[in-house]
Image (cartoon, rainbow, N blue to C red; front, side):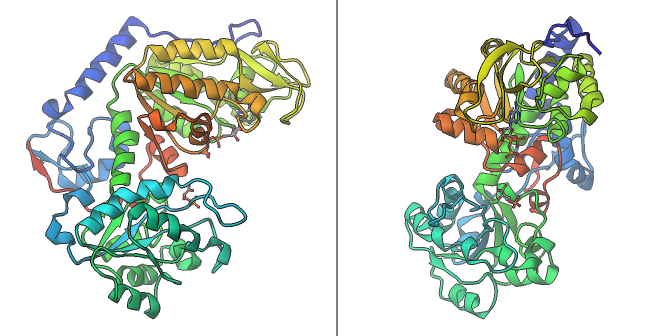
Length: 481
Ligand SMILES: Nc1ncnc2c1ncn2[C@@H]1O[C@H](COP(=O)(O)OP(=O)(O)OP(=O)(O)O)[C@@H](O)[C@H]1O
Ligand SMILES: O=C(O)[C@H](O)COP(=O)(O)O
């Protein structure tokens, strides 16, 4: 454990050996297609197989086809995409599209953020332009049984406007009335089913229920990235009864960035991890330590790291049972040659409130009775300088309590920095949840390379977990190389 006088910026610069190993691994990733005979498919979801995170997602598939690192010939680890289906495979076909239209609604049932609806449109438009009959489904919220305030009805006007076709709304997601509406659906028509979570069988992934949903259609497209970490009837169960079962364009794009770009990044590659607690980000930090060159930590979790280093943290958020973990993460970063930066100064408050008194202090000088709620200006400067050296950045979790304007400065500064670097050709990926909200608040969402539509799903992917909604989809046709 470091003494109280230890520097509060924990920076472990690469050793020569570490740097050279990072660059050689980078170059082997860049040339993966030729060296390992694994290549992304033209329109499928193919990624480099040598990477641990990717391996976690596709290992089972690699095993299944009996090829892997160093194998010659054919390797397919890609999922079939809706773009891989021919016009004749779509024309006149009833296509069950699972989207994540779980958008926020205000008390008057107005949509307050339509990002997820807009993100679902390319797949729907592609299908109707090819003469398919679209049976669109989604959940909204976490209803327990039929709950009118969680009906998908308020989404119909915006969906119709964005698709350019009047969407028909069913009052149920299965049953004779729905079957009648499906039967009368014209080519290029869109039928929106009612909230699939009105049935408890949905979340239980009940096979009989999945069969009923599947019986409505001829084939399946999963574009619900935000729900791909759930093995539910409409995300996983239906794939057993509908062939082909393929990925939509949004799902494909999310995987391209959150698996593809993170597995084979342009280097130097930095991750920024913030948010409230280290316990909720352990998996992400450990997984990212395997692949990044620079790791910047912010948010409430930094105080557990400070305390682990022997610093006093006042009444800041600390997870006492995670002090050893924080110490071991710092050691792991050092062992891996990752440059890990903790903020050198913080904005402290005398209470957890938007109108709290505040001041900036070095991270080593947080007085009793005060709590850190944001990173300070020196930290923003140091973080910005570190980010200036990078070519790929992934960000998950805010730098402070950005919901309070007074403590949103650090988060907003990082958002602006990423926007600036994005304009200079750096790949910037925002991993979902509150970091996306922060980027949107600053108004720079449109300049980032990728903004994930999934909170929990993006976190699980970054942790290297398999997403059942993705695993269940058909493999793309193997490509000989
Ligand atoms: N210094 C701090 N003290 C207490 N809470 C903090 C601090 N810094 C950030 N937070 C809080 O952390 C929360 C976000 O943490 P979280 O881990 O949920 O981030 P996220 O991963 O971006 O979001 P999500 O979980 O929705 O994907 C915010 O509500 C923010 O107010
Ligand atoms: O908002 C989300 O993260 C997704 O829509 C998934 O919702 P859930 O956490 O209720 O499954």
